[in-house]
Each structure stands twice: as structure tokens, then as C-alpha cells.
Image 1: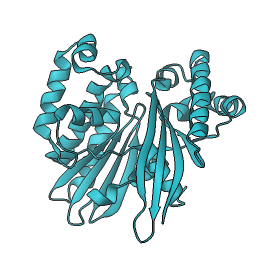
Image 2: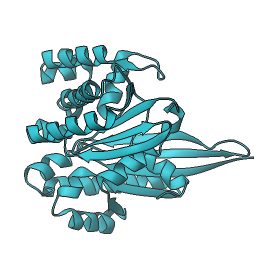
Image 3: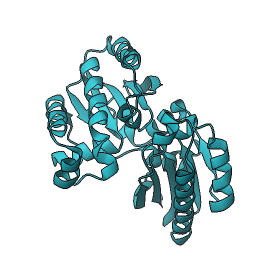
Image 4: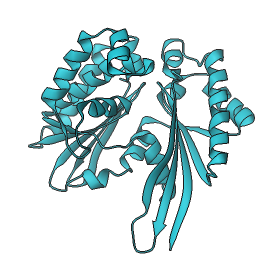
Length: 296
């Protein structure tokens, strides 16, 4: 007998907000299947407010409320039985975040939880990573967001260590990541990977997914350091307008993709990784799975 459950995850990031609706297919004697039913992405750049002036602007609060009302209606139409909404870096740092959360609960009837970088990394890591992790290898998992980047080291199929740094694409766009942060990241990566002979990167986040799509590669194939480096040079050679017109990038992706590529490149350089795998995972996938398995 087959049973289908409908779960939803809302990811309120620093660059965009996402609603993922998932069908969880249960079949006797088989592992549950998680199938994407719908994904809606709304480009509300909360990080622009939070990182520069320290609060979410009135205009963006209105946009958030509208988006959450729409998300609520979509969940109703899809007959979602359970959802969770998590906010990350931008909302962590906005001093009016508590009022925004209360307003959204009142006006859109959606309950939002603001989570720290450690919990964010743990939720993402609880996705389908185990299918990728070969027990005889070492991986550095890098999730680049708008406000922060999470690094998690896996070896022999187990998590070794994890750290979140305030180096995200929206911060980089606003020249808000000082050299001292880059130095800290370099030191952390080198210190934690030096005892391993070979490290492979696993990348997650909207920008690396876009780079992977542009490569035309099959899902299981990795991207090379050389490819990422050449893409970085190529993207830098184009203007913002060209990246939108010629590469078909969204306007809120075309400016941050270069900064994201730089983070992945540095992570590869400092860990000595020659390849990066790009599975289709992110915070929203992690939320659905963690909800289903009772981890959150």
C-alpha cells in the first residue's frame, strides 16, 4: 500500500524566500521517497536591510507579509498537513526581527523560527548527503547563503566538525566581509583538512546550483576546480546587464553569483580539493526530511 503525505518548508534567507512543497511517498518495505511538488522563490533581499542598517525596512516587511499570505494559501490549496518556517542570517541580525515574526503570525498565520548557523548547517546536512558520502573519503560541505556560509567536514561517513562564518553573498556585495574573516575561514579550513590526504567539496546553495546547470553536466558528475575558476573569470568579464541578458540569470542572482563562486573557489584552494559535487539539496529539503524523521 502506498501512502502520500504533504509537507512544506519555508526558508527565509538573506537573498530570497522559498516555499517547498514535498510529497512524501511511503511504501511498505521501502525507504520513503521525497518528491518536489512545488517550489516558489520570492526575491526579497532581507540581507540588504539587516546587514547595512540593522533592521528590516517597512517596505520589505509589507512584501514579506504578502509573500507569507501567498505561501499560506498555496499550502492550503496543496492540502499540506505540516509545515515549518525557518529564518536565517538576515533575520538573526535584524533588531526588529521579533516584531516582524509576530506581525507575520498575526497577519499571515505563519509561525517563523529564527535559527542559528549551527542548526542551519545540521538541517542541511540531514538531507540526502549519506547517498553521496563514501565511507572511505573526506568531504568538505560548503553551503553559501546571502548572510553566512556553513562549512562541515565529513570523514568516514561521519561529521567531524562544523562552523558558520559571516561571509555570505549579500554581505560581500556590500563590502562587509573584512580580510580578517577571510583569514579566519582560510585558517579553519586548512587546520581541519590538513590531516586528510584528499578532500572533495560538496556545494549547496542557489548559486552553485546555477553554475552546475550552466555546465550541462549530469547530476552525479562533479565540477572541477579548473571549470569553477574559468567560470569565475567569465562571469567577471561580463557586466551585470550581460549576465541577465546573455546567461538568463535572475536580477537578484546576477550580482551575487560572482561572490558565491569566489567562496567555493577559495574553499577548494584552501582544502586542496580538485572537484566539487553539487547535489540538489538545500535548507528547505533539509527541513522537510528533518520534520518527517522527527528531528525538528
